[in-house]
Image (tube, rainbow, N blue to C red; front, top):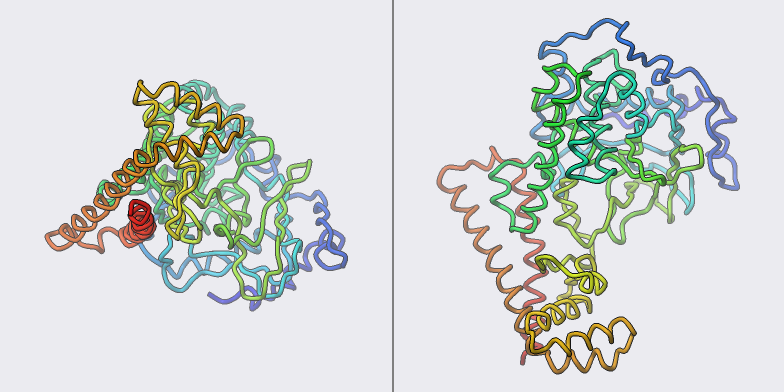
Length: 486
């Protein structure tokens, strides 16, 4: 890929009126001023869905450039970035000096997008990086209003509402919006943007049965839940008459649309979800790595700022979510975050009580990378064990009351009286998980040795890295527990 600097990026910026980019040029640093209103290729007046436009073709060639499977690095994606940035400028987006999108020359081993935002110049803390006008963004609510005005989609929405909350309904409308734009092909005002996005994914919905069999039950369960969600989206399409039958039956297309929404959308302050062109090229930064963030003004315009000094040549990273649950990030986004100081302990309680949730189940139950164990793990495990033994009901209540009132002395006394019970429970749990991962690795090696070819399973290295990462932490916790029992 030729760096954007070779495309005279500064010259491109000059096409935007100087007043609209002054915040990126003049100290002191302030929030960028919204770009002036202009006719743009994505404005509602130009994006007419009244069916007066030419009916797009229905053959497979319609989707060839947008749905082809990419199993590894494809140089052609380099060629899609330059027109993407020109499209962005024409649409009123603004970027800081040194803003660049680069494509890695080899496939990433962590599952992150090979195309990512970097800065070629030093960025001081609180520097404006990107401005995206609201009208460029695709949101669930906009899609609901646009598509719902054409035909009745309430049956599809009601079907999904039986399984998921309103947040998922918003993502479903984004899913429909993408499918609608794909049907328009090159007539879509978003064609350049969509054509720049990845074709290969490693999120749960994109995994195969072989992939699920390579993961421990907790991670496999999250990944399968993502696949189930996608299947329900596709099932709901039966009640969406505005889409062509060929679109609904195109598995590559529906999988790609689902994966793009669930790996690239961001939640807005009002709870809606949005695809933010260019803003979705920021890769994930882990616990100590995120050096940028997105924010929104009252008009819904999106801004990106640095939250620390960023040296030239660095990737610009935002947080996609809690880094203490790498299995969850893998299932939803398809990458492995190894930067977190801790990971979810994977202690599963069937039908957890509200008392357990108040003690931190499950999000605060962490195993640290140095083998440490969060207090919430000890609290929840002990409370569950006391709950199982009806003879300990008074002590269970006393423990919970001490927890709620902040009576650390009473709480620690009960912990000490039952420490052997807690220790044995945790040892069994960790030993089981480590043994499970050992058996998985043996099974993977056996399948590869006797028939399954690694080249047929491009996600396998990522899944093996996930398992190795989790196992390393568990083995350290295992050593810690052993030392406690001595």
